Image 1 (cartoon, rainbow, N blue to C red):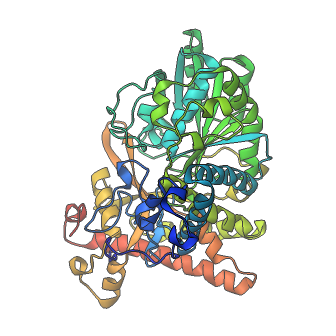
Image 2: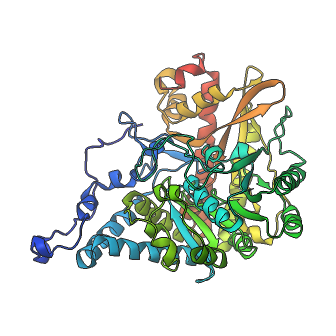
Image 3: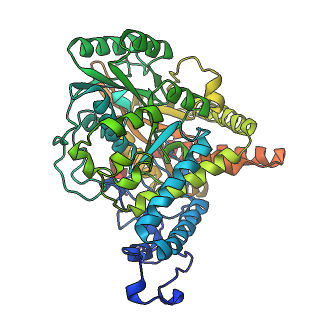
Length: 550
């Protein structure tokens, strides 16, 4: 994948200097301002964990995305990560310039804190959440947001706590650690060195992992998911623990569990022993459903990446205000949480909590959220009817293309009966599939090789006609492989074609014919991705050659 040298400074607005404002050094109030002068692409990649680090040879991170726009890439990987769009990149550059001006007047810390508070209100407006009813806690990632939810749950239920993770086989890899209050990497987003899997002071607890995949030969959601959740909650409560129940909406395969009937039964049987947090980090749910969760008193974890297509590592926890305000008045901060959050991550209304945290200015986290807000605002400017129409058309086209492929095996949706609050998400937006070669499904390692080969120009290895070489040269991003365990058989890998908000935003036009052509263009691009998979499978070269380059 061609990339400009990482040493080149991107074209961003020229920034003001102290001299431009006729200020003497002693009068210059913006302590820390020099960090804002770093190249924009560097700022967008900082303030996360090692997954954001760039491969200097290719200029991309572990997700195959760089910090600059990459319009030539066929990107259908919104379940994992997306390259930043040109529009969002420009928004980040403009936001940096605006903060620079504000910082020169009031100081960087005050200007940064004020901008974070403004972004909360902008995000609430996009999601149609009433001011004063919900608090937003920003975080570097959805994984960090899980620690914030754990802290709030322990404050409400006490230290004897068990986290139950529904869909533990289809959530982020860090959840196995955060569910137990343990460090999920060797370095935090605040650049504090910690011990992977070491306990986080004040957050340690027990956890129960509930997988969703039935281990039968055909891949489907387990039929007893509701029963498994009820039994796990009952056992934990009878053992004397409070429960933080992390439910799934939606999983890596687009699944939702448990059912609302199950959640209602939990509320009836254990009204003061269970707190619920929704893993909605994919953000593939209607705004009505999101509000319904909050109205039930649930916390909700979201990201600005995934469906909305902002840069990876932009997380947040939505908290019903009554819950967060109680914690603010009554709880002490877990000491270990200080390494995972900053004062500006928390709303100004939570004064007591905020005063316990340092103000660490994470320019990367902030700029990634600026970019994500641009994508969210653009998406919701598209008329409701077209959003639903576009997702329906893309669903029908993608499902047809997968069915027509001789090598791809579709995996169906396992969502509960869809209701009015699902809105446009009555249509699936994640399309998982297995790949068969020589009459057997590819292993996880072989799927990983396909995943990496799709993102590279492999025309020299494939050969063939000019048309074949043109397809093989394309750079394609799809959802990262998901490991599927099967009873008494080798685990298989699943790849995913994903519809993200940007496909809808860029397809929209008030000219119905032009909008139709735009949707057809996206389906043609998806057909190119599938064609490249077929070329890979037909190639005599072993797939292992493509695992780390050709």
